[in-house]
Length: 192
Image (cartoon, rainbow, N blue to C red; front, side, top):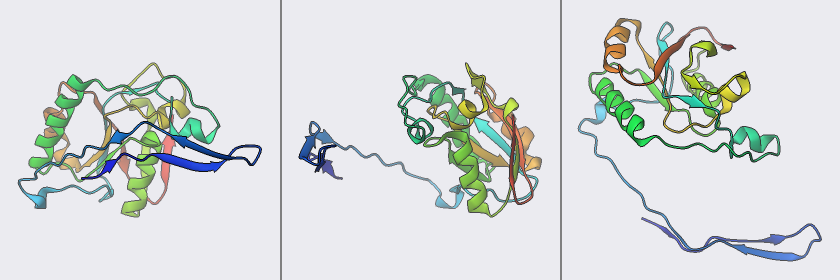
């Protein structure tokens, strides 16, 4: 473990005068999980053309503090919140799907949101995808940029072989999820 008791910044203000900013001492707590079988681990890269792409979890209008807003010079006020009850149900279902070897890839849609997660998975797999944003589970969003870059907590993008999709969808019943696309070609194509 590591304790982060010294969070200091030393630099200069707009008048080129030295400045030191310190935050209160912070303790970093790490947790670990035990995998019963490491051979069932799932990587982030999209694997095979024709695999279905699913969005797990609900995307809300939660751009506050996001990478997207930061790139535009904003902070925002709608920061992500966690619904622990929904998240644990989703994670338990996903864990069962992984254990049954139904998941080909999985990547969290956290920093940067769905758009960045999809791009990372395509780059890692050296492939493309066709995505229909209209199928994404959402609440309170009416713009494509908000849907692509909201950093709502607890969301995961997964791919599933077409032959496994019915079994996967059965396991995910009761959770927010939807098939939003397919691994295909060399380009990431997103429609809204």
